[in-house]
Length: 192
Image (spheres, rainbow, N blue to C red):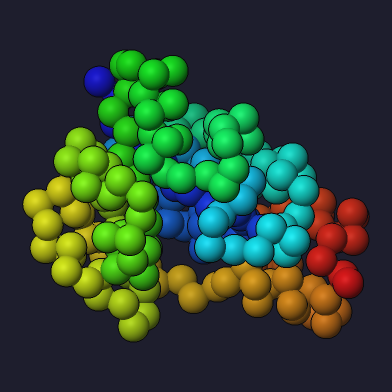
């Protein structure tokens, strides 16, 4: 059975930090593939701050190109909003019975994981692949047998900072995959 790590995010925009984490998970864990799951509405974020769903999906596709172990999923675009990971997992498992799905998350998300909807059921059937975040140890679940705390590089790049820098007219081209930067620059995204 293929083992797939699901990397959820709004990717507003996707940046090199996201890509580095995904590649690390492919090369240094037992995951066979990583799927970027573009979230149309994270229940913890204001929807008004998000670029259009399809534009963010397009940017993730531009970022990963034709990498054979990376995929992009818009599965949550068709599910009720706001999106909850537990619901998405059920939907994906029904659609892909030959795939074993697991979650990729930062230590900050692991710390808040006990507050997620149906978190016990998620953890009962899946592994969590956790990358470090400065100031977060992952909380009580860090030593759980289904939690794999990795030594992935700590990348302190935030999409919010990128959006703000673009708005201020700063050059952030090296913080983004080249084709993503070209698209953002061409479409004048995040300028206002």
